Image (tube, rainbow, N blue to C red):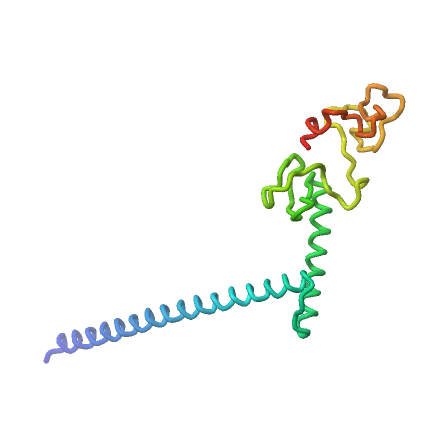
Length: 176
């Protein structure tokens, strides 16, 4: 056997070893992927179990004592999120559906989540966000005051009918 044949034999053996290793790596990668997929299934089921337990808790049902503190923490976090969403909605002209709590644009007539008919924006209290006639151009309305000054008789806010001057058309004018 010549040096060339000897070198060719070593190269061939190295190629076979590399192919074997490559196959092993490929098989291990497939196994790792399958393990990861199975772990994801477990995580999803655990989230579903947790969501079911939380629903039972919110509906006043019995839940295991050892998870009660966690369920209360979730409820506190949800309340914080809801309060923050209300604050954001008030500054960005959003409202919340009184039926399901979904965040809606002010001009939504129906909730896209639950289908409930909407009336006017739902804030913590009605005085938090008074309804204004979008067509009114008085300084008080532009500045966001609740009542227009008496010296601006053309202001629809001074109509005295209690609906901020919009009359029968106020829903159409404000999109509500």
